[in-house]
Length: 187
Image (tube, rainbow, N blue to C red; front, side, top):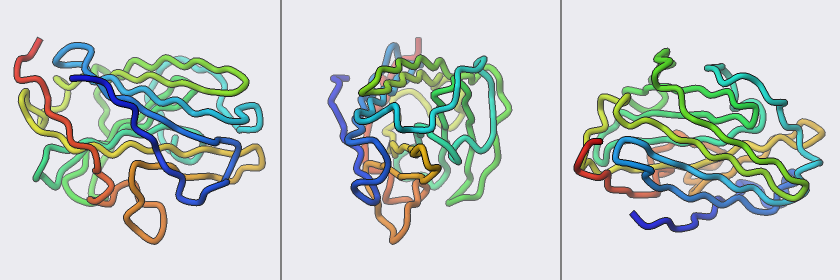
């Protein structure tokens, strides 16, 4: 799969200290989906969590975090992943729109690498496809990429590929705007 740069759009332009967020999605190998997020702007004005040991944590979306929503094309079930600049992560499995639960599989633990600079923050996350039972080799996927950015004063801005509702709703079925074919061979 060739990489292409995907721009996320803010729900309300001008919110927070971020000017742009771009993302790329690729496969490092058939079972490892890599998502890169690059936020540019006045990064020093943001509220960013400090570095922590990689571990599962809840409610990461209440602060700066980057998100991936993933489903098999035509299926109403989906997964949500939250990647914090702290190195913490969360994963959820949903049977249908907002009908889900946390995934407590430590083997799922995504690899997260964060690079912080004064004018940008970059987060790479690698998710293991083989730990997601619904997602089979060769499947066509629909992805929703999003971010929550916390300004220094605590205000949140919401970024996504698409904002199909009157308020930010990353779970909305129309938010899954990126189509991607999985490699047909497992590693």
